[in-house]
Amino acid sequence: MLKYIFKRILQAVPLLVIISIICFALIQLAPYDAVDAMTTPNMTKKTVELIKARYGLDKPAYLQYFYWVKGILSGEWGYSIVTHESITKDLSVRIPNTILLVLPAYILALFLSIILGLFAGAKKGKLADKIIDSLSSFGIAIPSFWMAMILVFIFGYLLNIFPILGMHTIGSESSFSDLLIHMVLPCIVLTLSFMPELVRYVRSSTIGQLSEDYVMVQQAYGAASTGILFKHVLRNVLLPIITIVGMSLPMLVTGAVVTETVFGWPGIGTYFVKAIQGFDYPVVMAIMLLSSSLVIIGNLASDLLYCIVDPRIKGMGE
Image 1 (tube, rainbow, N blue to C red):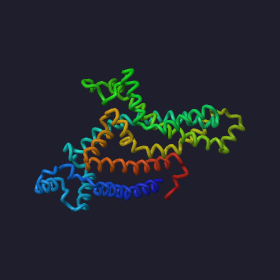
Image 2: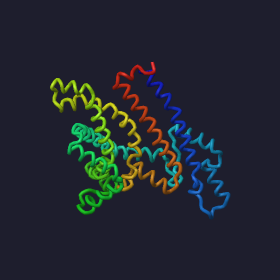
Image 3: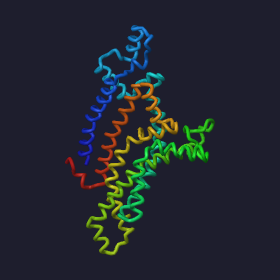
Image 4: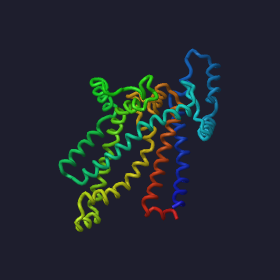
């Protein structure tokens, strides 16, 4: 088992290197570079050269990449060319805010999806299954920003029940209840955005498991349908969900870009959008690398979880 884990970790390292090269290359190929964002047509050539030298943009691309990676490995992600603030400092503040919003929404969506997916799979072809499947299809088709604006209009404007902007009311930054009230609408949007695909995945897995021989054996022994569903089918349905949970790790950082922007939540989403609007390339590169790396790490985590929960994988790599 340890051999398998070590092998998977070694496979992840070159992927992370390739991802960093791709992220850096994409920014280098952009038609509008960081120098253009910091200069104006009225500046003299000497001033432009000084700005390039200050940020190391006068060096060859491979040296810029080397210094960029060196800084990341040392925990220094560089500085914003718009605000001149440390990206590391900004991320350390904004990532917890995003996790605070996304994590509860995803856990709630996962819990509800398992229940609804099991119920729909057990009632395949019946009215309840058709309703749940139709709502899931409808939910996949609805853009999250449209859903957010509808909730803002109804609950924020017409009924005036929940706040629609920010993370705290001014003057109530230390109030936990105020934070919870501000979380309600964005959490609902994220939960409804995460649920449809999860529901359909659980439903499909449940239908597949109900056709297995062990279910027929349990039925032959007179086991109750509810007991079969929650004691046996659920256990096997949860195994492939581990992959989804592992691959959803990037969502904890970049899964709420649209929702955070609509609600003005001070997380990675608004930070990323503002960086794109301001051509703040160091910030864009940092978030691209972070998100891409989390995909690899999430895939690795799901493999390791599989290795723990499924005994058949423990012998692999030995």
